Image (cartoon, rainbow, N blue to C red; front, side, top):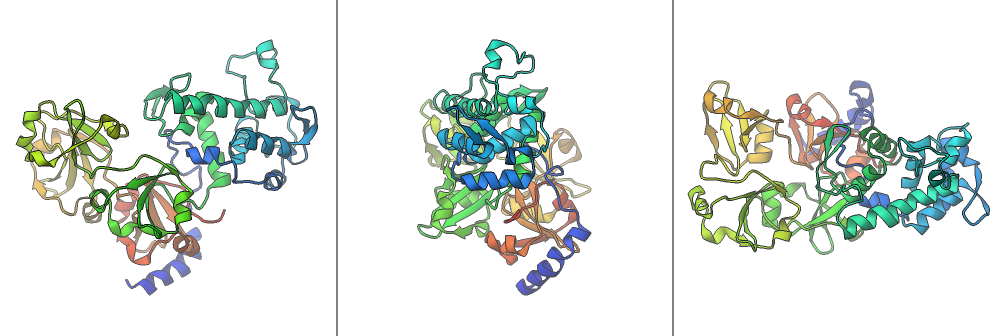
Length: 465
């Protein structure tokens, strides 16, 4: 289909009919990822709202806080918005973060008739599951201003510096470290998420925070997994979990992503994201660290060779090994070690002898490739290997392979365009959003329903809320 026809379809169907013909995913319908609540930047961006904006927001939500007056720590009676804004600026925290905490803990932002206890314990600070609010160690934090101020201090002077300086909070929560919360395994991906679980060690409470945040403040930030090129210096960056990661070369870019999916933006857009660790190695690199160990890098994992003599067996030449520091691989998860008997250390695409179904096999797990479109997007240059029923049955079954992040997809007969972000499908039903974020009509892949449905539903992507 030509670009003009794509655009016409988007205008006439995507905007006028999508709401009628296809359900728009709400935050509640989108999949909650317990490993990522909000980005570090979202927690600490103190400049996102002015005092007037905070007051207008409270009035718009029609809760009692819009007109509530309380005594601040200096003894002066002030509006709730004055206290919230003062605390946000003093402790370098996002006013939006404080507003969501007030709503999560006591529904104060939207409750038109709160009880005094909701004001007294506005952010739930010092009130643990088994705490007596009348105990002296707890009651001294009673009061709206004390609650907002103490909670902010806990994050800015407690959790966040501990994560930066010690690598963990006092409950040993840390980015990249697995922990069990309410019987579920959670691995926080950033400091903000680790801090939130330290404050509220429950899945439900943090899911509620996530739901409120994304209902109120879903922004026009580029979705996680987007590739951006700085038009000023040509540098390329991956946006991931609210941070920008520099991709050091075209070879690295091509080993992970389709270079055609890169979006050109101005320098200011790049600088708006906090900088994370650079992506310094191409996918499937061999890297030797100072201990002498050699690792094969596969996607986001590192696989150590048990015996260095096995490296040549898999067809690698000595000159392919890159020397680096162990710290350079800190962001890679430790994968299964590679031994002489390891099959397909990089993974392989196998085909069923009868059904001709395709699978990606890695670490003893087979992952269905449900369409030629996903095969082309992920493994265009890979050889498809004939397999046997017995071999395929020997592997355990894993999740189906998805399109790479940043891919634009749609299904014939359905006007909704999706962008793949963190393996989820995020619908775009507005042409203004599509063009405003720099997407191009010719980059949309028209694919099968099954190819779209292997992605969990994500939130609607929109420039304006």
